Image (tube, rainbow, N blue to C red):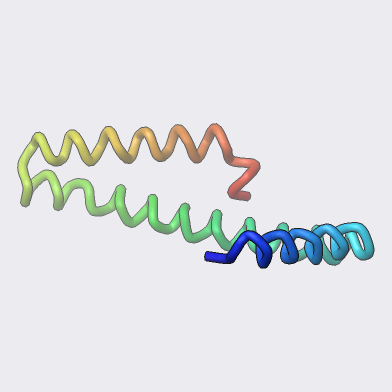
Length: 85
């Protein structure tokens, strides 16, 4: 966690970088966004694969709750897909 002064300074540096070299800043921004999206997608796939085992081991109620959470996650990922891709 940055102090308010450090946060202000960081925002100044970021703003300056964005203004002085927008192509570089856009490239960095897109790479970071892509990495987060890939990890989120991988996590979602792993959780969907774990759903049957969770249902068998923890019961139908836990499986149903797990499924609702995953459907919500999938809907949010679809809704904000431009942010993750």
